Length: 129
Image 1 (cartoon, rainbow, N blue to C red):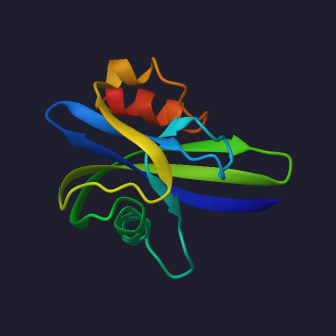
Image 2: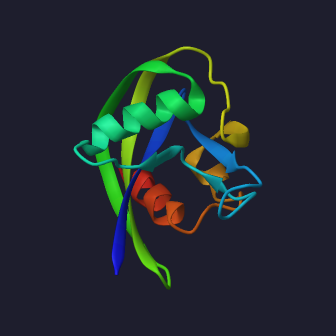
């Protein structure tokens, strides 16, 4: 079975974290998630996360600090392994390129949103840090 390695950013600012809503063209359209994407060949997870945030949110000078956890989701045709990393600083105003909305919420408030299934264990692990 094919394994897809993906990274996600838990971006924090003023005791809040960023969640973004998936657009209509993506799997799980309308669900909320931590931004990120697939790790390309010859990339480290941190390199992939920086690239994905630059592409998706139009930010740069991204400071990735701690690894949080990995969530594994098995689908009929593939296994997705999603790693979460803490992001504590960046430059630029967030501009959505592949999401329809974003918001800053407390970790507890995030549970009130329809989160993508793979992101829920990552949020719970983050709350334990």
